Image (cartoon, rainbow, N blue to C red; front, top):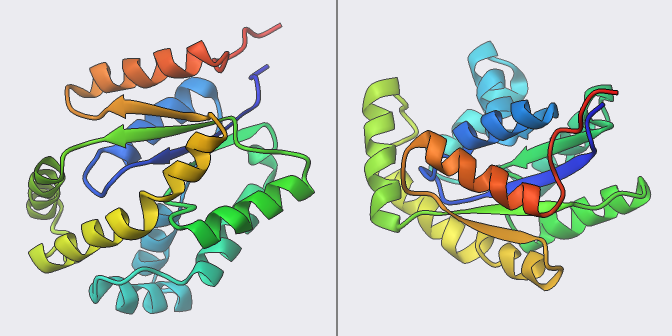
Length: 200
């Protein structure tokens, strides 16, 4: 049996949060709910949502709060998320924090912890440039990267202040090997009593 863990991972593009989200979610036995993955899957499948998202992201813009919120609510309503989840990419602004709070409150739930991956801007840019080259990611142009990082700094970073007031933010040094960073996150969550419960 897994202890319930409702988590959010936050960090600038290129901070490695997608990789760490997958590792932590697997360790805790909960699903990762990544808006980026949902959007990319739809783009690859050529769905109407995918075409809509493709046009928005190609311009370096972000998908609307309404559309993103609907996708997240649908995903969190699926059976595998009943015992916990790890959100990656949502909420990304103050409006979305309110939307998520309302949704979770209706279910008698709240977030247990927020993992902030702290990575310097130049490190994020270098990682994104490398990823674009390796994966052929057409949405990772220099201009789009700079625009997304600026949006992160102006819109997403402030949500951390909201969660800090609630005392649930763990700021993790996001520079180092994958294993080192995973260990830092695991230790921080363990200190909050969040770990995979032993099977009974």
